[in-house]
Image (cartoon, rainbow, N blue to C red; front, side):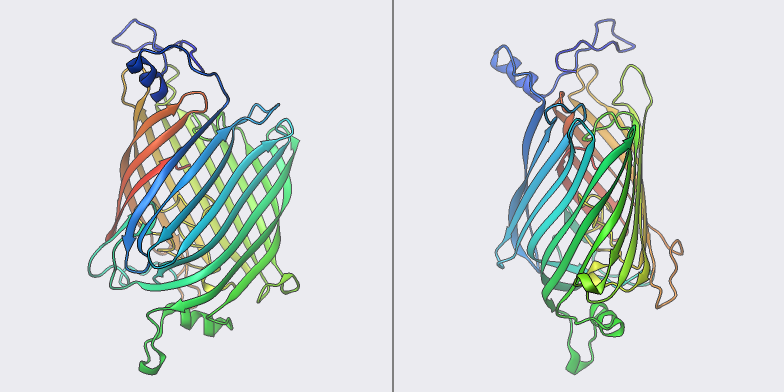
Length: 406
């Protein structure tokens, strides 16, 4: 890419298009020449808002896209921190790295938080949780109170990491370590003397967990297949991941359990001339395959590594022993030639189960749709600033992020 003249020309213009990014535009405005030719790009995205549980919150996310020495694949690192006026703090770090000449793929998710989250029980019940005022979220954080919400505050330490080695072209196998511990859980809506019992309390007591603290530790087997041409913003290729986690009591888990996770992404460009004109598809699922998990460790929307699933709904809005999520995007250029400005239309749907109440996976779905803008910040790494609005049932969300959602 760089300053390479692209082969495509607009159908209404015979002048070859030259891809540009924001820095090219700024250099032109300032009438300066030259720009460093580098294989990395860093940006910071602010996070700001307020809700009844957290009060006013503020912070930011730093993301770095780069190519390690000797690597042809792009890698990404991100770290974020959010503070609130109620004393809550959320620090997280995430990585997807291709190392040692692309032979080793390392993926990690670390979180240290004193935070809050509203929950709504398990499964998707069309008659429950959709009355009254609709919810509004900013980057997945709720900003208003919903009548049916049952808020929790808690401390959380989490580390999920895998290291996978390439055994054949684009195919990786490896192992992982998983630690997820919740403590100091305050179930705000719980009022036992007046027989007001929350879904979290009922589930925890029924399954034999301490509703104030619980932990899930284990290891995993991991398989990855990746043919994407760019990790941050793919124009073509597929990504597939299958992960099986075993959480034995001898590793510190409160109860034995196992969990199957799978994910698939596919990208298809609709034009050889304008590759940003494409369709994207994303599917992920999680299933409790044995034993039992604590309430907050159950699969939930927004709990993927980068917290991007379930646009229009807040983190944890839908939860269950089983989760299925899928999303489609139509991405398109808006700028006639430069490619600085683009757009997106998307549609997603979620289904979760509640085995105790007999709500099966795929029995009910909740849909959402939305649109957004893309601003190309760095053409070398294809890093976009994404600005989106999403709308679901009695819920909506506004999002500002670095790189594509998937």
